[in-house]
Length: 408
Ligand SMILES: CSCC[C@H](NC=O)C(=O)O
Ligand SMILES: [Zn+2]
Ligand SMILES: [Zn+2]
Image (cartoon, rainbow, N blue to C red; front, side):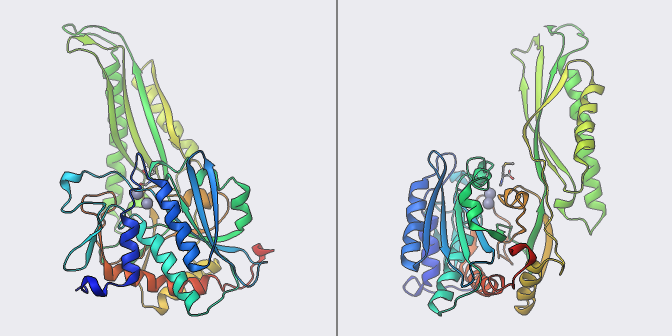
């Protein structure tokens, strides 16, 4: 792949790079600059613009292209504006400079996750508008804060607001993940994040003695049970080529806390785990399993949840779903190979699906290594521009899906 010189850069790429330079990086994102950027896009494109402050300082910006038939439900194109932090010393280029190398790779935090998608939506709409198209269904683009830290001050609140219901979303698109092969990954469901802290209490005392009933030995038992479960799920994934990562439950031990001195046996210790529970799991039985591992470890071992998503939803990927039919038809017409999967991580799509809106996770990046949250996150400009082409075909099809029973 080669790139054009700076003087002939495609304007969509220039806009993408401008957006990448806005420092919406956690934990202190410059949301004000992002909102101003989208307001300016609305002005330039002649789109409606609404700002909904879902929590103090947390604004959802909604850009609207009205359809010709207001009785129909709308298409919601969602993207988050925040990006994850960087370890600057591990980057080849400043992650907020949007440097483009001689081959056409654009290096920036958010290049894949998911500032590319925000600009692709906008540029597809711009092209279709310039060409004079109108479609029956309204298209809303929502630019939301806070996704990278869970969406609790973003989409989780927005879906409960009257402004969200007024959008009358019938179908939504949100982010996916790059695919290194020629195929494109599309996500129809998500695993549920359960963040669990196990606290173990036991007898304190002098660490020179063979203490019994210690916090550490009981915590060790729980850690062993959970890591054995992890190994079982890992083997299940490894041994079945039909299973993708999102179809099994994962867990990682992410924190160990406790203790004050080498020679003091502490009375309490804790371990924190990030579980991602597959959508076909019996949640009640799984929680009972966690409890029983704690009980089996001995007295005084308890667990608490820091995050516990209980509403997994699956968007059908067969022709019973007219949105899927339209989406997959366009991909087929464009000769794109789709790989439908369950999202291993958590995105704002879980909130959208939970309020009854069918949704797909799709970031059109094929032949691209998965670099979201990684050092040297980058995207080739040709892949980015191909993504604009893809949305330019998808939007007319989705916004022209004939009236559905759910529309009335
Ligand atoms: C569970 S809330 C955190 C959400 C976060 N989303 C993207 O990386 C994730 O860790 O999946
Ligand atoms: Zn993301
Ligand atoms: Zn992310």
